[in-house]
Length: 358
Image 1 (cartoon, rainbow, N blue to C red):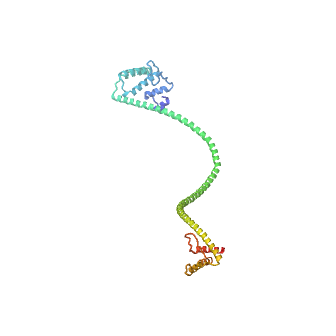
Image 2: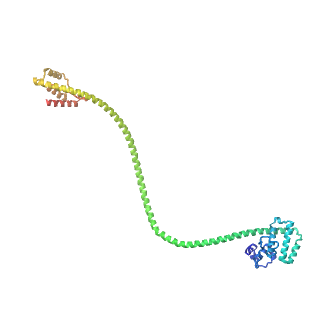
């Protein structure tokens, strides 16, 4: 324990300013003062906290011996020692007291060995031992706290150095900060300009998005129309295929009818050829005789009298040609309506052409 610790532990800063005597100090304080105040006592070979060798009778050894036995007594269980320990402790302490305090203290120590203590003195000694025990515990705690304080002082010094370094860095950083501030100020206009451009771009993007949305809606509408038209085309195609199948069936029937008509036309052609031959023969006969046979003329007159024909322009023209030529041939496809006005006009045209050729 250093002298500064003695001052803190025992309040010597206040005690030194008043008149005091060593009788007011306990054993621990006295040894602490003797160790630290000039002339300082030298520690024994075994140190201040251990029992010195029996042959070491130096002042430092006697002081350490008194301190050691004092601590042993304070830290013993209940302050009780065996008779053997009492004889050993008391013998060593008498020798140390005699060497430190002289013959007077030695005599006092020897007489104290035989003093009978009453109960009040025993209680006082017990309290003293307890107080000394508490003092020792507090001293150990103070030592630990002193170590902590020293560590904190070291940390404080380190932190102060760190703060100084930070201050230096801040000073350097201040210059750099001013430089960066100037750069930021120079870039601020560019940033503002870019911000305006970005705002314009956002507006354009919103317009484009609106246009895209509108176009998307139009495309969706067109797609719906295409889908509807596709469905309509599918339905129309189905109807077309159905109608085409019906037409194909009708064409097959028409082809069959045309085949029959072709056969009939072939027969008619044969009849026409035969009739033409008969007409030629009749022309030759007429040319030879100069008049229509009487039986043919009689038949025609008889038919006219009996109103055999419907008297229309076509019929009149037909009968006129029949009278002139003696023969009238009406031809046409089956089902074309040879008695209809259109067919009759075609027949009259054919007869007129035939008459012209004649």
